[in-house]
Length: 483
Image 1 (tube, rainbow, N blue to C red):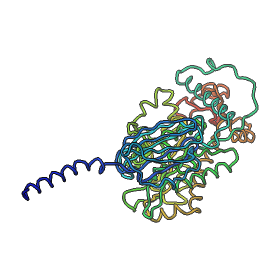
Image 2 (cartoon, rainbow, N blue to C red; image 1 turned 180 degrees about the vertical axis):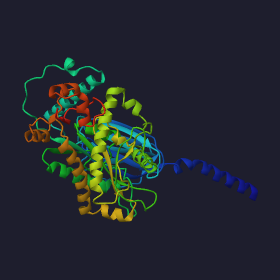
Image 3 (cartoon, helix red, strand yellow; image 1 turned 45 degrees about the vertical axis):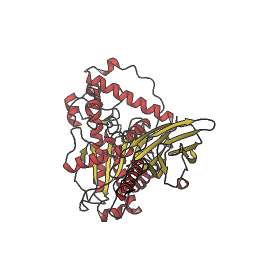
Image 4 (tube, one colour; image 1 turned 180 degrees about the horizontal axis):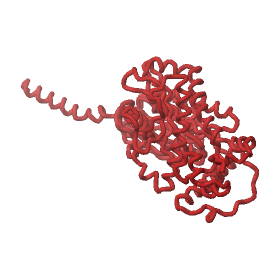
């Protein structure tokens, strides 16, 4: 056999061997497993070296969830996975059909599973996300009392009926049923929804020394919730109380389910350079952001849903879908006015502790602020990308001061404008001057009816209360001018 023939046969053998190698070379590996436990769900994330086809199905007797990954090997230590607080009792793994990976989750409760794959982004590579939803569980550990929920619903219904009558130009007395005899005052708590931004697989901004926004804001949110709960007549609802992710729209849904009177989302700002500093307060803008910086921030915060697993089809320009009709538009206007008023109170107090990035409440299209019926603010406590502010944001004393400022502004507003069925409203009514120079608006009232009752012209009543029209809200206190 000639040397040329041997060389050709050797080359052919190497090419044949190479043809067999790509399937092995392209096999995915599970490089890490991450688990986050929330009150109403658990999220298990597989960090993959490359995309892998997954088949997920449930088995009973005993309860199990099986996750099959095609052409995948396990390179992570499953024993290091912390299962505390989740529905997963144990995790078993094995090889299936020679090349596939099987992961079996032993469950201690009923779950509704769903799964999806995520492409690489700036923080992570390929991922398989498996969510275990707990049927019937609340997203918060201490949900609102059913009686309080009923009272809150009655307040909202009365307020909407009154606004609808005004929009349609009818006298409310013609459509409002006769008032029932007075019932004992409910003296309900004012509910403040406290939202710690980011969480779980979304760390938020990361400071120069590695401080993660999600950790700092969770600690501040817990401090704020304690201050709220320690104040008479207030109750806090933590949107997330541990390190797990909550979708941006889910945050406002939780606040609404818990009948929140106010929603505040706590964040720590970031920018491309370390120079920007100072605290900011944002309310929703219906026409978009009010500055170039605000637009960039809104986009970066809203992208959190992509990190958290939303498929990217969520439109942020949805005000035409959400704010439908004049009635809802008026509701949003009143809500936004309250947001801006409370925001000014908060910003003023933050300015006594830290520099302000902007001297006024800014407005931007943050998804968490898009609740038409709950006054909402997003507070950027400082720039975590600034080394000095990053250091201070980690200090417990500084966090206490910041949350004192936030709650101080919120409390001041509700002491002046308490919801009608709240304890604060009852306390105010008990000590209110009976000389007749103030009137708290009740369900069914109209401005013309109030003016006639007190013997003053409607125009004079508008002027005394700086009203541009006839729209009033239940619980609002009007100053009655002397006739």
